Image (cartoon, rainbow, N blue to C red):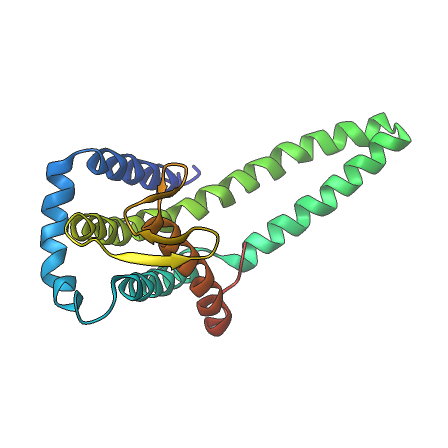
Length: 197
């Protein structure tokens, strides 16, 4: 009997719990004040936008390491290469109107799709671990930004309060955090030789 893979379902459940907790101010404030014991001493020592750079560096490091040890990138690349070859072969069979080959490849396509679905589920596994660490950091930033009128000068947006909405409903601090985290995660991945999707 095939072993069921529940990693993807657990990650989705954790994501839902985190989203619900985000909408409950009491939870956000409690977690934020708890995290303040850890990060609070840094406030005032460095500008708040630099503190966000530090936290996004930490995020980039642990998320890259978690992905490195929970995702089999070699197997993922093999599956992607096999799918690419299959699609080419299937397209050629369709163009040549080889009905016998098309039927044979359609049976193979079901197996390929199942394997690709399993690989997609594997990518959800690290999300649960990453969220458990990332969300408290976000709650702390929300907790502190409610008290500190910190500013940042950003390209295209000029000088803005970190709590100001700069891109639709996206506040400046989240945009800055994402830019730093994505940039730094590429550097971390390259330096640790972590494969990409």
